Image 1: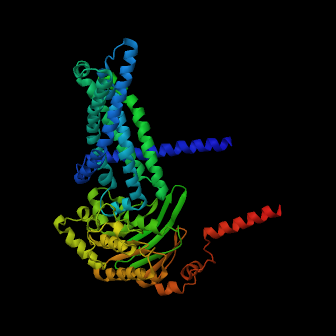
Image 2 (image 1 turned 180 degrees about the horizontal axis):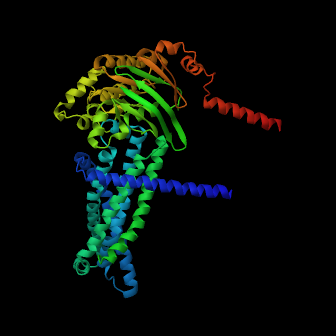
Image 3 (image 1 turned 135 degrees about the horizontal axis):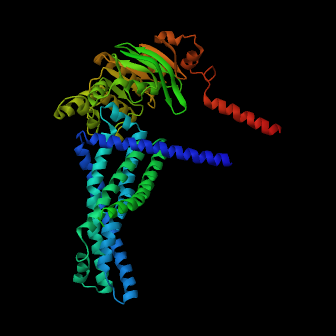
Length: 263
Length: 267
């Protein structure tokens, strides 16, 4: 039994190492193809619409309610300690702009667009459409992966900025309706405290998340095996791995940005 | 001409091709037959360069695909081939004419303005018309196969590789596809390799038939000679008999299951 468990663990480690290696090849090929400047612009635009425009409503709604909750909690806490709902605008804006908007937008988009990409590419893989791309003279990395990678890199930062604004608006609604905080106070709490570096901190993180979600989803899609069940597994794995990596890399990205003083 | 020398291909611990030596003469249609898992489709994919042999080599007009490095060289090599996948492998998000002309952008210098006309011509060659704007999901199985064939010939290849072209089709459509393969052979003067289980279609289209078994070539001969072959493996396959030297896995499991049940009962 112990031998079986050790063997199983060893197999898991070996498979994880092999997948990591294959993923590295995909990343290298992606950047390699991009340096040749032969980009499929039409496909890239289509992906920007699918990843960006179609995700806007759900990310905006998520950010809106997050802003509302933040305002609710901050107002309640500061009333408890200071008898006044203080710094609600500051807390809402800083939390959203530096952390919550980048992370939650990336997670929502991973669940929506990342899953769709893994499912689409996985279905193409199991029906030999990826092999067909080779036989018709193009490379699947160039035709499928790069447009999605570029789309994410352009669109996720924009979605995050939209989330920043909608979240701050959501926070204002609660601040005004529940705690009677005047608009001028709320906005001054933000404008007086926030500097460009705070915005840049959150904005730069989105590029890391965009790269991770797009490449992990594409990788899981193009390496799918085993028919419909395999597509389902690939889709789930793409979302779970993307989400875990977003949270893990958030820590390291924050640490690096702090070390450079962008904080 | 396609020349395979000692081709070995492994996937992890499994060796699929164990030393294939095969020559396909220019202008002929070679049909490869054999049981499931004997390496027929794997060999076909090695020829077009989707897989690279672990040992041995495949030369197409004297060029070894493993030697090709630049994108230009690989595109020139791929242009020689049309590949018909078993399930068609049409791109779901594109219409029929977009599917057929997809490869032209990468394999040829033809202006995009002429693509639709070329698609209609290719469809006419495979006996279809007025389906240019359909999506693959709106086509029947036979139509999908024919559209996939039209896509395979759009860039005017010198070689066409058919991976189980008649599998899953009704008997009439099977004969239609077999006739198409013969027609294309005559009209386009291509060299073809077809992988199939369908002996009727094999006899119809083949110049020679090669039988694969467990990753090796058992026999290569004219269809009339294969029909009366005294090789027991070839005999069992072409006659379609379950009893013989080719052991199918299902029967082995049944025998094991019966034996285990018998031992359990006895104890």
